[in-house]
Structure formats: structure tokens, C-alpha cells
Length: 631
Ligand code: COA
Ligand code: AMP
Image (cartoon, rainbow, N blue to C red; front, side, top):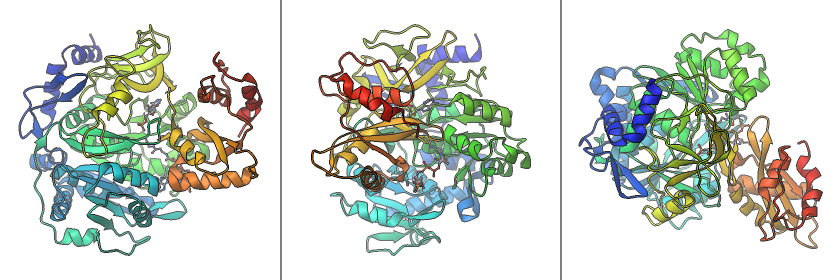
């Protein structure tokens, strides 16, 4: 058997031995004697008797093993014309001091801290400082508006919020502090402190409960890493589900450190001293796992980039970063490449840079369309590796294992299930489908270490019930991914799209359900549906269809302006919601369910079968020209 087949088989058939061996890749204050705790199946925990500190593993142990002078983090910020490099010693010291500062404000093990910051090194410092104390961070992406931030504050009940005064987007400065204030003005839960990093582009006024980052750091006593149980939560990251209420995905300490360190070598072929760049945002899971934790856990150098792929200053921005910092591999979303391709279709900018160190491009977060794959492969001349995973899983489910056994690439496929992941394709009744047939992609339980053990509940405890209901109840013994797809005869996985109302806009996961809730609140709206339709740049864009209340008079333009503004201010600019059509009626089943999937299929130009349960076929016929309108 090859290395992949051998490793995969062992991971599935002997998970205990496999993961205890992988656990040697991290340092424990109390080494685990057992890998899997299945005493509460279908709820599983990993390394139940292990103890460790994640920040110690990400920083201190590299300083102790002579990597203190190696760059741990390179911040490259074309939007502020700045760069800063932290060695492992410097980053450890910053983190220890900020952890001491947090402790002086009363933050301790198990307390939650919300981090609402742009792509600045202090965001990474804040995350690792929480990990050092055993506090639980919850990072909120800066493109979310006050209401989304408020929902997370209410659910996580943080002792402190860490924010920056502003973020910098192309052509505008986004003031974060007023967004934090607006959010906290509406929440019943109030944090004791708001810590503020003042940025030159837009410093803010501090109020009584605010603490200035620099002041806190100047008087802080460095804190040592606090050992925690492997099963204690490291972070909660909220993600969109089918309903408006985001799900708080819980990540533990032990399984997370083991799985991420393992993946860095086996999947990405990144090792101590390599320079690695993930162009995403710390507010997303890709940022948590592969900007912050995984590269630092293995002693690599991570690049933190504050800017867009184009326009900072030109279409060569990505190639400049790769060449300037000697990046070995880049991980980003296909959208970023489409943005580059749009302004530089022949990749002329590439010729200006020396990309000799660059070996691999990894893409994930949304479907990789073959056109973008071929463009990247042709121009970069390195393997372009699509891989598939989710916020819930924390690390790749299917990938081309570049560090274990590189495999031939099939465009359109995320390649093979990664060791640890028993991927099955199921039909409606839970029967396994043969190769080539599309169905629900499900993972046979238990999920490997590093995956969500449960969801966060809004009363300061784990919500096993919501977790079970959302992911484990559809198919007995399986985790439901929410994606559909098929395995081909060689075992390659093809991910075709979501089976629920989650959409993916520029690699950002959003819920159409929460957009519908915003639209429905408008006084003129009787009924509405939001669907994700194909978009050449962002992969998908949301599109709203609205039925007006009887006797309401409003123009489509006026309604669109209102609704676009409402989504922007309640969910955030990241939703990129711009399109609204007023329609006479929405197509429904006889039981009243809106036929969103059928609408989506027609809008994307597919031959979508019309369900036999449709109530009034003429409504759909009338809607077809609107759905097919080329936007
Ligand atoms: N803080 C505040 N606002 C933000 C923000 C942040 N952190 N991130 C995005 N926004 C705003 C943008 O300014 C934009 O506002 P606008 O409507 O006023 O222009 C809006 O949210 C949409 O942002 P975005 O989707 O990023 O679109 P864009 O046109 O600015 O950039 C791309 C398009 C393709 C360049 C960009 O989406 C990109 O680089 N995507 C990479 C994908 C990625 O990182 N995915 C993460 C998972 S891997
Ligand atoms: P997120 O939780 O934000 O990482 O989004 C996860 C979802 O993005 C998945 O459930 C998929 O629908 C989609 N996705 C992520 N990576 C890929 C990929 N490589 N191919 C197709 N879809 C993907």
C-alpha cells in the first residue's frame, strides 16, 4: 500500500493508536493515555485525560528549542504601508504581557473574550493571550455589522471585548469602535471592559470602561501559560446556519493542537522554518486554523496580510508578498484569484517577481471552478490544490496530501478523504451510494480530533442538544456536512454545493435565512425569499425576491435602496446584498414551503426538475424570466 492508503486505513481502523501517536507532535503538561472517549456516544471527546496549553505549544516551546530568533509572524499591510516582523521570542513576550493585562482586568480560565479587530498582529496576540490563560476567545469578522456582533456578545457573554479603533478597506476607513458601542447599547449582557487598540487612521475617544491597549501593555506583568484539560474550550467561532441565529462552534484545546499540527505536515507539507501564507481573515475558520494556530504550532513563519488581492497597489500584490517573504505555499479562496485574473488576465504582473521559493497554491472556502484552476495552474506553474472543509471541522476533510503522498489533481475535485475522515455519500434514506452517484456528504462518527465536540449555548454552557439536532439527527451514526457531492471510481471527492440555505459569497459563509429576516421586517414586504445565485467574481451573490403587501405603493428602486441599506446595517457589508426584484408571488409547495432550490437552479441556468408537490405551477412559470435575467 502507498503512504496515503496505509495511513488512511490505520486512521479509520485503529484511531486510538493513530491519534495517540500524532499526539506526540505536541507538548503536554500531562500526556494523554487515551485518545477517544466514546462513553457519551454519539458525543465524543478526544484525549480525555490530557492537559496542555495551546499558546505554550504555539510559542514557548519553539523558543525553548532554539527557534527564538526565527520569525514567527510577518505582518504585511499595504493599506497602511507598514510591515512588522515578530520573532518567536518577541511574539511570546507580547502574548505573555497581554495575557497578564487581561488577567489584571479579571479575565481567567473559562471566561470568554470577544475579539473584533482587523488584520493586525494585535488580533493574533489577543487570541494567543486568551489561549495562554485558558480563556475562550470568540473572534468576530470585521465585516459584520453591530447587530451580528451583538448576537455574539449575547450568546458568548464575554468578560471583555478587544477591538481596534478602525479597519482599513479600499477607499474608506471603517470605524470599529462606534460599531462596538452600537452593539453593546442593545445587549443585556455587558462586558466589564472594552480594550481598544488605537490606530493612526482613526483613533477614537475612550469612555469609562475602555482600556487603551498601550496603557494596559505598559503596566502588565507577563503571565505564564495555564495548563488546561485537552477537552476545555479554546475558542467559540460563530458561523451561519440555516436559521438567523448563528451557531457557536466550539473548539477544544487538545484535539485541535494535535490535528492541526498533523495537518500542517501531512496536508500542506509545511515544517519548522518554512514560510507560509494564508490570505484570509482571522475572523474566519481558515484564519483561526491556518493564519494563527497551525503554522505556529509547527514552528513555521506565518504571514499576516492586511489588504486585498488587487488594488494594493496593483494586480501583483499577491506575487509581491510571495516573493518578498519567500513564501513556500499560499492558501486562499478562489475568489481572490478571480479578482486578480479579472484585472490581469494574462498574469503579466507575475514576470516582475521571483517566485522561486513558491511550491504550492492551496484553495478552499468555496467551489474551485475549473476556469480559475486552469488559469492559476498555467500561470503559476505549481500544483494548485483544491481542498474542502468547514468551520465545524476546523481542518481539511478532503485534500491532496502534499506532505504524505502527493496525488494527481483532477480539476473539480477536492481529491481524497484525509486520514481520520470516514466520508460517505448517502441517499435520502441513509443508504450508502456507489461511486459516481451524488448524495449528501456525511462523515461516519466519530469525527477526528480538532472537530467541533458541540455548540456553545447561550446560558454559559455547551448546547449538546442543538449540536445533535443540527448535525447528528439526520443520519444515525453520521455527521451531516450540509454539502452534496459524489466519490468517483478512484475515490476522489467532488463537492457540488450546499443542500441547505447557506451561501458562500467571496468565500464568506452567510445565511440567506438571516437576510430574509431583515427583508421581512420592512413594512412594505409581505413575503420574501433570498437565494444564492452564481456570480463570476464572488462565486455566489444573494438575490432577493419580494412580494409586496396589498395596497402598498413603492418603486422597486426605492425598495431596493431600503433593503440594501437594511442588510448592510444589520448583517454587514460583507453580505454584498444588492439585488432585489418585486414579484407578484413566490412558488411554493402545497404545504407552503418556498421552492428556493428550484428558483436557484433556474437562476443558474440548470434544468431544474419541478417538484410534484408544487402548489401553483403558473407562479413559477411567471417568475422564470425574472430568474433568468442576466445580471
Ligand atoms: N471590515 C469591514 N468591512 C469589510 C471587511 C472588514 N474586515 N471585509 C470586507 N468588508 C466590506 C468591504 O469593504 C465591502 O464593502 P463595500 O460593499 O462598501 O465595498 C464588503 O464588505 C464586501 O467585501 P468583500 O467581499 O471582501 O468584497 P470586495 O469587493 O471588497 O473584495 C475580493 C472582493 C474578492 C477581493 C475579496 O472578497 C477577497 O479577497 N476575498 C478572499 C476570500 C477570503 O478571504 N475568504 C475567507 C475564507 S478562505
Ligand atoms: P466555512 O464554514 O465558512 O469554511 O464554509 C464551509 C462551506 O464552504 C462548505 O460546507 C462548502 O459548502 C464550502 N466549501 C468550502 N471549501 C470548498 C471546496 N473546496 N469546494 C466546494 N465547496 C467548498
